[in-house]
Length: 302
Length: 187
Image (cartoon, rainbow over all chains, first blue to last red):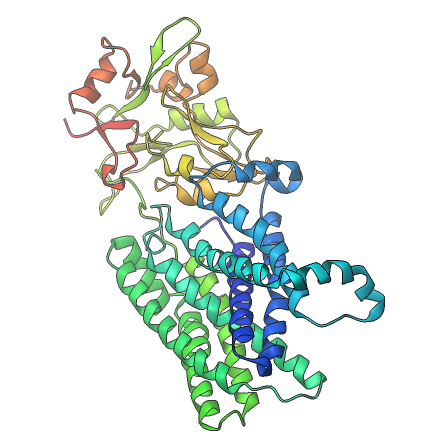
């Protein structure tokens, strides 16, 4: 696979930013006690996706040396990468404007620069939320579609990959919003209700575990796909797959959230350890998807 | 679809590889490397040696298949990769951003990324030579006359007749990309 760490991080951050936006939107519908999570999710989405996109551009050949060529990226409507270019181009500014609409004032010396824009954003809040939600869903699904369209890597050429990336995006975005929200709440000495998020997260992680297993089962139907799955479950990539993706990223967090939920939010450290595990697992998953991609043809056979 | 050149002649190119005549000498790979200044460590055209298990039992010339339904053309976001009306899949170096999606998308693994140029590259059937009325370097050089450029738009073309008769077959048609490189095997 010619795509390396920059693309793995981009896939992770793109999903995370999309999930953080959707978490923010869910929080805003769930009452004022979730304002901290709403703001945290909205604040980190734009910068996360923008940083991921910067990595994507950094990975380009001539596009990095002659940036004006990037305008050509918008031209082929048959290409998932063109869809992605449009999605990112719209999503990053909308996510930033959405953050302005829902967050509080900055320090006065900075606020005066953004105050006029913020006033417009607050007035257009509903439109911004709808646009941010639609674009976030599109961004979360698109990263999987990008990899699943070509026929060259059977493990990736599955409709389950976009589903897996969507669920993982929701999960990592939620984790990032909770971690950032928690840090902010501690600084402001306010109590953060992690209980609801732990319950939502149990559902998400269980679904992700199911989709992951289904994806591996479907992937192993072809010879090359079977080699890929073997690499993941019992080959060179198995230690990272089992320890980081499965244990730290899925099973561990479920246990942490179950215990935390049973204690009705009295173990924020346990919950935060679960969130950190989800983030590590989400990043490792993107890496492994690229590393385990075995080409459909290893040589000619007539 | 075929194309009309400046002289008004229509062409629809394909490549026929007669594996019965191939001795695996790699002259085609060397000629390609010299003609196209392929950087060390990469190839536009190569010979895959025979293997005792799994793969082919004869040496196989391996390069871009110039697919009619090319995944590289579909996924290229900039339209830098496109299929000419004479059937040759080419890269417009002036439009390409070097995203490598075409390399990821090619099921035949026929593309490489030239780090120095910041661009992908692959066999283009020596399109400059073709446009000048010359055969591709590999075809010109092949010592066993195992390689032949076919023109499916020419009813009298002998190599094209081997394709039309079904004697020459595409590699891995099950991938659904409709390749334009055809192989004659086991006569």
